[in-house]
Length: 545
Ligand code: CA
Image (cartoon, helix red, strand yellow):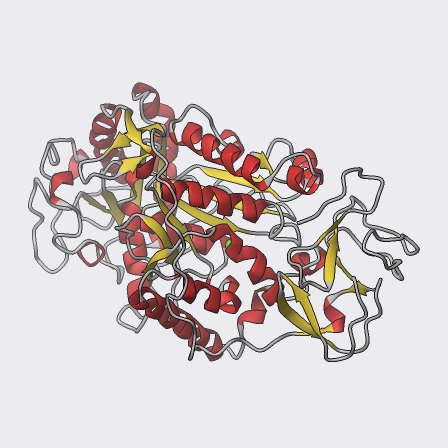
């Protein structure tokens, strides 16, 4: 990468020696007549983040960025022209056959030892970065009642339990009015189950159910779904309000200790609304008492489970923020941590790079299988991966999904890819994993939470105030202009890389150290500061009824 040093002169960034376009880094773009350091004179005004032709590109010629064709010229493009999406024909998606399989054997990186953070060790061995009571719901119908109860828990109970960070309702739009036995329905169900078991919730599972919904509590948590260590201690000794032990639909009765801690609103024991609220609050109290006894202990950095994601991307995403995150991903892998990258439509065009980085042919095949499933899923709606890009992406200089994908996968760094996780499953291994999720910010975040994410890193170029109640989100700005304007929303400014003030390595290390501070609770992210909480959005590829 090259970047001139003074902001008054044209700042161009190219990613690869083969590239015949570069992006304009100057705030406000560049006017026509500007003489570029590479030679040509600008023929058009070129906005910041947009591409300029460094050489004459003939009609049908490849437009090269990141060293690969991101498109083909629809007509002759003279050197010095603004190269925007209307001049480009998008390449077809690479076939999923004949891909290079586990061909790259990267040199083993030296382990990174001695880095620790202060976390909450759970009975199942996982480590939380926050101490949160999360109340699971089986169906959207109960959301209003639970919201009411959560507000009262926050004002009346939470002050008595100062070691507990928050109380949240795990609300969603699933649970009823859905084809619950359809192909694909297992995805939202296991997602919700695994989110309830996220390490930040300390294994304190309690469920609010309506009663008549399709997603019955015992379907959400079949026997054995909750690890035994989490249910065998003092469970069942807390007050369950006026309910006692509610009968389960179908005539089954709940076993007291070790059973599912469920409040069923349609239970006949409830006379009026306040009876439901009392029951939820009484049950919550028992869980708050146990959570309040949790203490942070020093644990190795290998206990981090990090999900990386981008949203509201621009042409700088692949130049500044995502490369810095990629560098940090490599640091985390060297420290023995778990890192997930996701967003199927944003890796689809780089599938050959990923299959070649797989540690084994099985990992590469699992990746191809996820891509094929998603291709078919998109085809059902008669679209393809190009449906991903937004008007904001294009305004930010990203011409199409190929260019966006090349900038997106850089978040995964250079480490070998040692695992593939289907959507909604729980991650059980260290190292770098491709967690297959849609690129939709909230759906990706929701699925990474289900995987067991205890820290989230999110890069943005256009700017998004994204945040999650369940887990801290560190937001990384791709440009200094955004970091300045959103000074109280962005946690890290990777725009310093394009400004020439810092290197990718500098920002990668800055992010790594910030992650340990945030994981330890020593620092709050801006999203935590302002309590910016996006909704959980379950990925449901199955029909609704
Ligand atoms: Ca995203």
